[in-house]
Image (cartoon, rainbow, N blue to C red):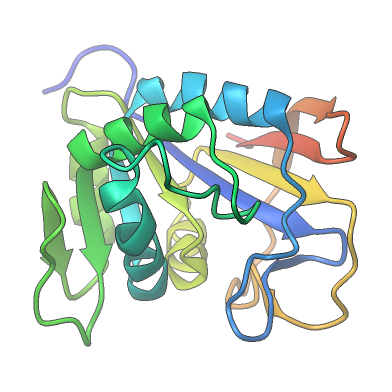
Length: 204
């Protein structure tokens, strides 16, 4: 039996002010980049050793981040075309080394380093993972996975980076959550870009 605190599952998502985590076609070109926030992200990713992905987010991340470390001199910032940053190299190196759990019923294989394909999200298996030794686990994007984990009370911290933009339409992050969940505010931090990072813990 594991002693000490359980590993946490942390969710991070960019969010429009009207609640969408991607545009109607899955795009993220509305994200307002912020250098201070990027530095914080590069620092904080060291606290995680596992990423949980849905298919679409996995494919998006694999296309860019798999090669971003090797191509650091030319790889563009995915939210700021034609530009790059030192922070993206730090994040790319971390993502390439982390365990990646990909939940998909349609993918036949995953080829990114340290990636493993799972056809179903089993709440009991996730609980077992949380009780193993290791760093925290993190979820990026992956709306369907976020909803499933939320339904089963498995996400410990919600990090929402709210951008100062209204889209009017897009993909809502929590559209498949069917029950209310009380959250406790941990932090609300405004950045020079107008982005606001909201950190919430799931109430016990």
